[in-house]
Image 1 (cartoon, rainbow over the protein chains, first blue to last red):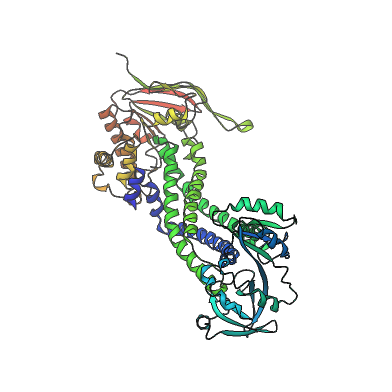
Image 2 (image 1 turned 90 degrees about the horizontal axis):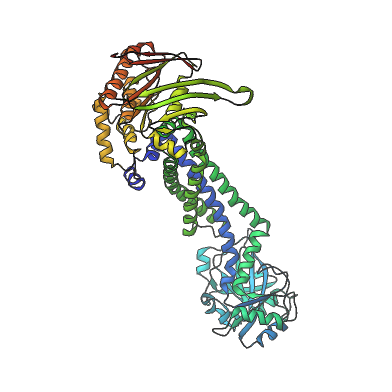
Length: 390
Length: 234
């Protein structure tokens, strides 16, 4: 490390020598930086899991445009859309096909507790609207009360999920009906539900007798190959006379849902503040470590200043320290952060995981914030006459 | 032939504090340091010795009066100019101020590398040579914590002289040393200075080393009250 830093900075690696001179303090400083990393990793992990959980149901479908009620901020929230608008939209020359999407929650008695399955009702004869993993099994839903079940739903054991096949369906009672799951797909528990279930629109209406086939929750449209989604959305706004409806691309719908969850739902706001506080606490720790180090070596630095070393030299030394602390503190922070997220994911079944983008963001953030903290910590040194520092 | 003046102060006044607490520390101080001279600035504590030294060494901004150092005026000089000038000086402090995490060799190398692009090997060679001159050739890899007080101060002398400075400014370099070590350090400073033509201004109130000085300036209450030349001393 010493040689590497010497090559990197073209001088004696004073920052490294200074940090490692007192091993106990160096270990404490690394622990501080690692702790700051862990804080940010955990908060970012929770924030990311919300994004993953929010966008997951959008991954079950393949569509270009989604029409929803004006108050439908999320896929499973808001009022219904009159089916007549589906027929109206189909009149657009670029719209190839469309379906109504029904969304509701059904309880599933798992013995010790009920779990909530977010249930989608779709036309089983339109596999093009489903993700390839699901589309192959969609025909199974043509049987009344048939379902495709989320094999990653909370409370679902791996063995139980593996046993679900068309020849050996898993049947359970819900909403006074016996539902039989003939196949599975990969979903998972989120913040608003414990898992997912896919049924035909007819089965859905049997489960929710108060719902009407004339009023799905959303309308999904597929456009002809090469069609301009934005232009079609613009035309549909003119054709569909109900101005309260939200007509947007399917991708935009997912992003708007995510923004709503992160900025307007209490959990999202709390998680956002968690990340902010994690970053601030991390910043304070790194600043404290570096400013204490500068203060402890003020006399030596003043001597170097008296010898003719300029502000760039001191910044270089502190940046060197920031780099060492940032890199060496990141490794244990990454290991502990990954472990905590893994344990939390196992306990909560939320999609909590360390991602490479998280690791890179936190690493670069640590280096940048460490360098900034170092620059702030050297301000007094830069401003003072050397004689005032002895 | 005129003797070259390395540093000169004229009508130097200096104050500390502000408002009601503002206190004048120096009053109209004038002095010159010719090349190769070994001048001792003495006086009681609080007389302004260190203030004179720090002003002449670009370690403090000149408030009033003139300080000419190596032909350049320090009053109103830019920070960058002061930084450049400091590289041509050698400083020795009462507390050796060696960097605790650097070996003796590395501490002395800092005095070489400040000059600019010097290879590590060359800096190490120069440092070893300087440490050899102060009798520490066998202590180059020692950290300051493993050196005695006298040895640390000798490392500081080597660090101050390794860059061949035009002027060495030493502030109470013997205050923390016993009599023999103090005499060693001052003799070393004077011998190496004479060999290289270095000018030395040494601030002290240590009477044990006065016989080494070839000029003694006495400062009292911020004024030079005595200027005694002692040719052939030491």
